[in-house]
Image (cartoon, rainbow, N blue to C red; front, side, top):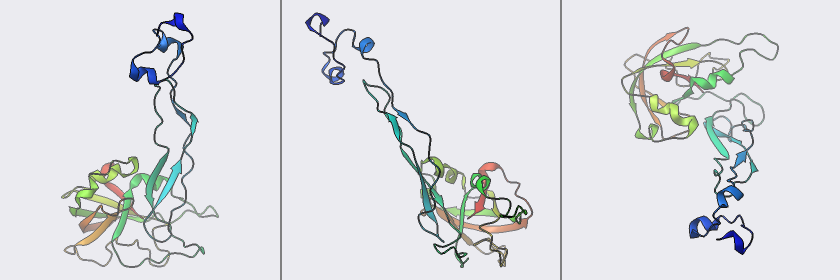
Length: 218
């Protein structure tokens, strides 16, 4: 539109109809979307079993005039609570080992409520025998670690509180009492279709695998 016919209105539709004022992009600069910081993570949706937690953020400025659109406003990640809704310790029934990235260990408490150090736990080394194809097709930020669960590689999995049972000193699926020939099962927290098998190599005090092959029991 020629400006001599009136005011240039900031109507984004003109970009598609190709009838914008000649100085549209000067008079109507793009306004990018802005969002708040992420909230704290919520608690797990279900106690005593692999579930998910959520964090959100909200829009503080809507986009305009072909500015950058808003990014995702919600993220989900796998988790597992160790107490039920009544505050009772969850049982450690026999079943597959539930694992997640070693990064999750950084958020775990290292001392009890009185300041005393918690049991540092131990590490279990496994040889990966198999994995399902669903481990490689997830592309959410908190599931990318699953791509490094690869057949034939040695992986290290840390057993530490609160995944470690106070009574038995074990983590579910850690292979204690099994033979090296036994095929054991594991499942990724955050994607129940990502699962597979492994064989136990040994138990050690600390994990020494590369970061991409280091996990924790949950």
